[in-house]
Length: 426
Image (cartoon, rainbow, N blue to C red; front, top):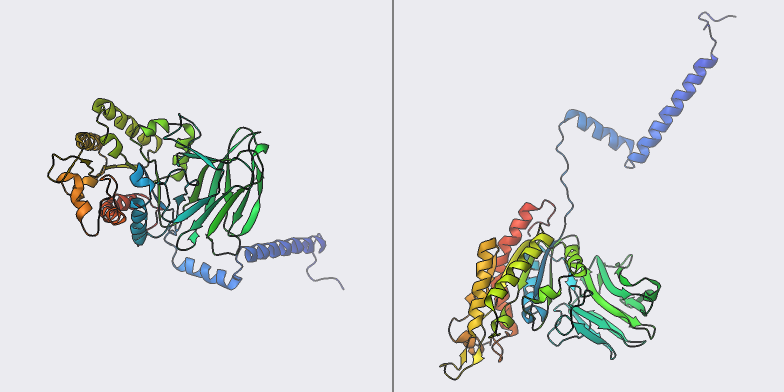
């Protein structure tokens, strides 16, 4: 029997079209499921919700970046007493970022870290920016640590508790004459690295947290595995993606002019990689004790370095710390101590620079006794100044840090307001 509604071209093309449409529907369904693993029902509910409320507010950017305060100075910064207290106080307000610059062994008794201790075996020698002619290899630490044979070690250990980290970056000199090292993180050997396999230059070796671990480290061991020398240039614990990091370095005996000796591409690049929100320069004590200091030349150094860092770090707030009070023994004074006359002139020069370039400046001496060059701080209980009348005691640095944090927090808060990705204040 013939169909009541025959198709002039037969049923074949219709069936073909239906098959193609079915395949397209199946592909759409598969893509939908792949894109919405939570289920089509959830997607359909979301779709209805979007139809009911077509004007949906854009999602806020939940990504955050750490606040980084970099502090560079003389021995007051090198011991990490003042800066260690600053770090602790700021992290109470903004959270822990844990960015740290670690000492490269034991180049000077005044160089240490408040968070990490370091033990160096015999055989390591050190060159610092203060005892070595200009060397473009100096990075932020201002130190070169060089081994003299195999099985020499550097061991870093956290002082109080494990430190969470994103990356630990060790920077070495490379070249045909460079040695071989082994790296051990929290007792786990990460491998051996032959630095001679690379051309002359520098190599950064990044260490990541152990998979499945707590993301923190307790110890880091570097061991040499050849007679060829190993030259270590820097060890940086990189800041996490939240909180605040105070990354400090100091050069005992340094004046502001040490920054001229650190004017190299390597140093500048290392500083830029920190991406500091605030860069604090804290020099002045050693030049203040130099009776032959040329003030016009010193003012030129200040202006040159301020211009250099403003150009190098255009998004960074530059700030200054002028030197604390200090004294020399002088029997003509009732208290037996007198402040060197150049110290006041150094403070005045820094204050003039800060005013002319609109830089925040914290006057350290303003919180100290104004007579007898801080001698009263050596008499206080607990003592606040050391016998040399130059350095402070631990308590003196703690009180100073409290005053500095009060000064610098508005600077940090302004940075947070200006940066949409900055970690919010707690």
